[in-house]
Amino acid sequence: MNEPAGPLVLVVDDDARSRELMRLVLSHAGYRVLAAPEAHSALDMLQIERPVVLLADFRMPGMNGLEFCRRVRSRPELAGLRFVLLTGMDDDETRAGARAAGADAVVTKPFDRMDLLAQLSKLLAA
Image (cartoon, rainbow, N blue to C red; front, side, top):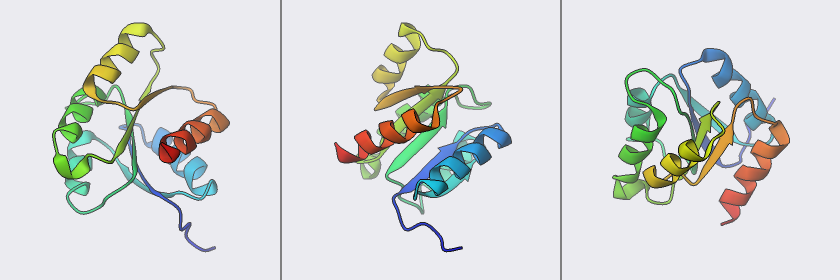
């Protein structure tokens, strides 16, 4: 089977099953996928790789998704990167915090595969 040639996406989630599910969904949709188990290793990856979209879990050990988003947004070389926060909390406070940190979108877990792919398409078209 050939590797997808589509846009590169970085998935950051401390839950291995969630990372694998995202990898399967995204690769079947034609995306190339990198994965990291936490924000610090993802920051290291971003020194080398330049994904167009970053999907990060809200609750991670060491550095949560909001702080990770703020750190990504503080790096000028990553200005064009689209940031999607993944969270199990679907409330106004979480969404406002994500916007304030610089996230482009919030996707609630468990996510609907078609909704996630539509959200990614919309972000990449912007």
